[in-house]
Length: 166
Image 1: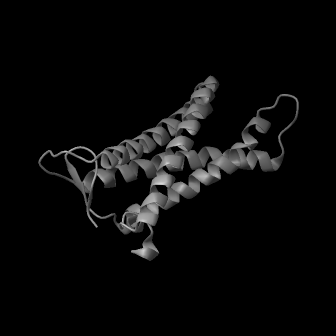
Image 2: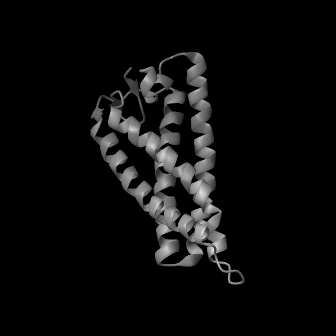
């Protein structure tokens, strides 16, 4: 069950906490997608926002802060689960997996930061916030496609993140 990842590290099998936090972030991001449609309506100068829109906007804002906190915890846990090993040549798929995973972490953290800046400091940063959403969609699509590939291959990689299949 132990696989390799980028750099000179070996990744241990994921803990139940790491798996739970991964899926919690996935659920929060789906919630962000759902609540994001209320945000333009709450900032429309011609129409007053509905109570539902205001609630969704608040959920979107505070869930974004929660995602940032959970991602910070995930980074600390990921860092703690790596151990050094001698440098070796990694397969192309391992390098790509490392790039996609690192890109997802970075894009989510950048989007959280841009959302915070947009909400509390500088509204025009919403363009950057939207840009990182597109980056997340692209990287998540690659990530999901790779998961499907590993599922069909039956190589055990997919099972590492599905608790009931472990």
